[in-house]
Length: 190
Image 1: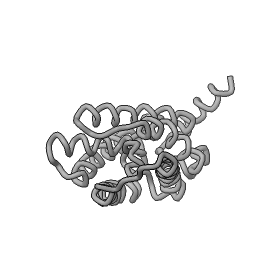
Image 2 (image 1 turned 120 degrees about the vertical axis):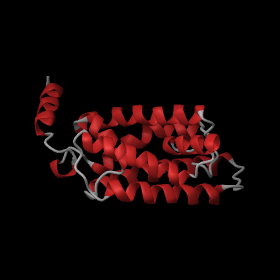
Image 3 (image 1 turned 30 degrees about the vertical axis):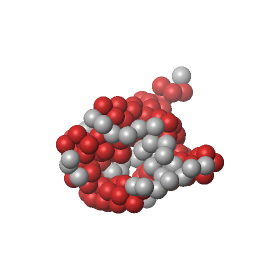
């Protein structure tokens, strides 16, 4: 999406906002935010898996690299820009879904989303709220956002759920959430 010049994904808006305001490298911000979100998620009942560790390290480094590589890249025609933005959103949403589906464990952002959602049926709306929060805070701090950022906040959680299929018991990373799942599933049937 950065290459399409439509803005960045919501989490990157947050990272760039912190970087712009305090000159802290995005990889450090991602790792620090990841540790805080992972700790909160574990405290709220998310099962610890390697994704909680690999997420902040890998994602932070990938953001840093992508941000530096995209500097100065110019796409002047609207159609290639739209295709790049659509590809970026699809890749982001599918990547999150595949990460979770393989039961590697959620990255800290997804772990925190799962912890707040408590049940699979609430994952999308919870994710949208968290992504909007990252966008608002990051933009307020000076991060760059665009139409792609807003679209990604709504589209990426939907794609992630379609790829992930969190309703499968093995794929839902919460400890002892069967009672919560049963209550939510029965309330949805009413």
